[in-house]
Image (cartoon, rainbow, N blue to C red; front, side):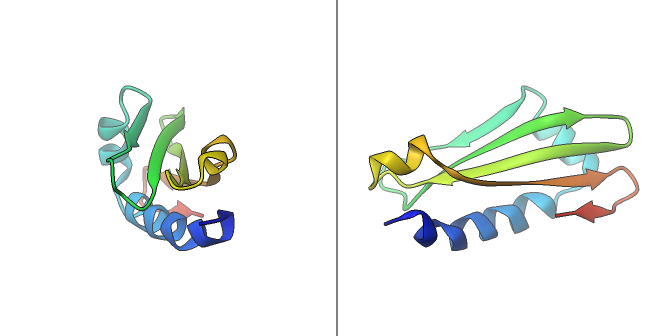
Length: 90
């Protein structure tokens, strides 16, 4: 698996996380990040709260493959904003 192969996984995680409400993201990422590295999974995901502001949250999502050790050194990532009023900027 190479970095291009990870794109569909990143797209799926971006859709999943950006669909969450502003307050839900603040609550779930209260400690700063979320990591899911289940053994045997096709990919690992890490979600980081970059900015936690009164008007929006800025979230980064990164994926890498356990099958390609180098991919975790250069994870594929993207960020998005979710505003308090419900707007989303990807």
